[in-house]
Image 1 (tube, rainbow, N blue to C red):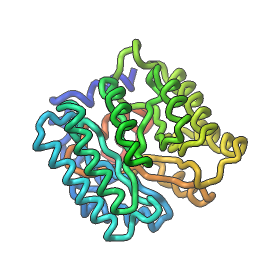
Image 2 (cartoon, helix red, strand yellow):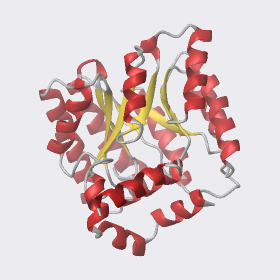
Image 3 (cartoon, one colour):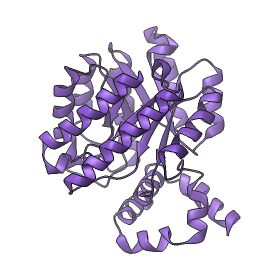
Length: 308
């Protein structure tokens, strides 16, 4: 019930206005978002790398319906990648970028999005790193996977995200694992109907575990995006059972959520990557993250109280 309410809130313009203009809310955004500029993102990336953590950066925004805005998003990523490379942060893919296809113009047409994402991939290659196409609403899933398959012929390290909450995801994992693709597996943070998605938390967790086993038994590079201690433990056990080397998969966690666990895992020799968003359009991102793991709402509310 709480998760559904939060997902509904993420699309509410009235609540967006209320929260984004509240001084207390804006004061804690920096705990979960790097800042508004590429320089902010590079600064926080530098700090995370010093702690032994890898990073994937997301320039916040989605559902672009203006070609000029889609081009501006593309230019922002290219600028960011140039800064990361110049700062030596992209070596061995230590810092990469996550791109929402709709921000790059997916709903303007596959050709527009493909051209923009190809430019980002070229900039990433020049910087010595990679790109992951991020998860979005159900309507974007199939066109995103199709576009990724086409672009992967030129950019073989192009990753994609699978949301365990979707009923199709187990089949998608089987198809992607067979080709050795970089796949980020997350639970999912969009409000979808029961016809296409599991709505009970237990069913989502079971789907995640099934998808996890498929990816860990395949030849690809699994990127396991979860804060759930049970799923992290299962992943570690599967790595032992399948004989996976520590550099053949990674854990991913959100910036500002369970940082001590991030460092603990990294200290064991595991690869840990922090999902680091930046930009001014932070409202929907933050509320969906709370919905993905409602207990994070407690962290958020305590932060509001401590800074009010």
